[in-house]
Length: 484
Ligand code: XMP
Image: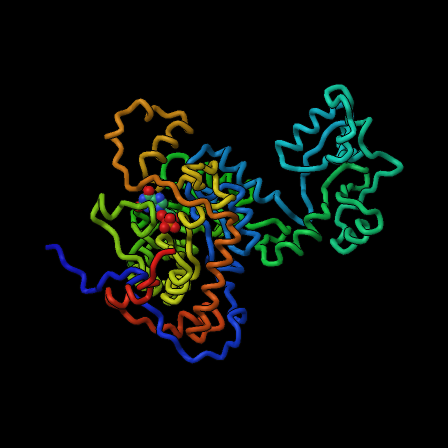
């Protein structure tokens, strides 16, 4: 016999947080660092969604610089996903382990090609034995009239002006060399003069000032997450992504409370000997979340159907309203210490506060970030208004896009064969991702102040929710105003 759950299914808009006495004198006093997984911390509780209209390298770099994390989507070939993870990991670091190089006999045109493709503005020049013989900066190339003919050796800085550091040099000593020589890049060499690293002034000085909150690994590289599936080549993909430097893997399927997902979590934990954090999902219940956590997941992604582009609930009749799903799943955090990620349906900063107060440790955001500069895809101009495309990963558009990227036959298939659980839409162009994220965290800090909470765990412990009626909901929004 089917049964009817006694729990009421509530969405974010069904509740408000009851204001409480606060000792905070400014919202800035609220500390919003949090745990993404059991052992991996973030400076802000924001994670960008692994959707192909949301997170590739640019978004992952931008979000990590703000203190959150981007999860590169998996709807591309393994080598493409690896490319995006590597791009994030190479975007900054204390020492670049294997810098891109050129040979003295290469042409300036070839060197410029590497600079453009790799997004760098300078290349160490090495001989056949990888001995450093010079450095070529973008500036050196500006005054070359025939780049296709002129060799790198003719334009590079070579001895006696070439400055290099010893491998193992401390960032402080590197800074002194930068200052004394007004350099931008410092190649590092071993005792035989062979190139074994590169330090840039941008990484160790400029970016620290520009992005004080950025989240980094031990080598000073930005953190990057990457998504994998649960079938086919998922293990090969996982290995390639970890080798590329991914700090966390997200095993992402629509219905994560599934035997094959639980088995996959176990296999991944065994494969990487527990050294790579695995986030699994998606779930919508206490039971599903607990089973994934017991299988070894280091965090669980919660949300079935709340996303702006999701139609899962309409198509399948299944799902749990997101606020209730988080409250339920958060019991697992209390019992087992496994954090949960509230995935989907965040439309405004108040929703972030409610999700964290309900027990989530981070929120995953898709559509809100899809309209930003850093999301993949072009800006579309329609009637003078700028938009970008956002699509559910189970939408028809995503299925066909995926098929063409993987060279599958789906394009020729009848579209009615695909049962879509998502839609494709235009979203307003919203400028930089930092603007959106700053609004969200500003609202979060204010919300914490209303609850008298100095930290996210205090927010969760103290929160008192009140269920509201439809008239109360109307009262909560701007009302009785004429549109200008
Ligand atoms: P928002 O509301 O931030 O939600 O855009 C992002 C989350 O939505 C999920 N997602 C989907 N869910 N069909 C679904 O039912 C889809 O096509 C789809 N695409 C994305 C996903 O969990 C994402 O993080």
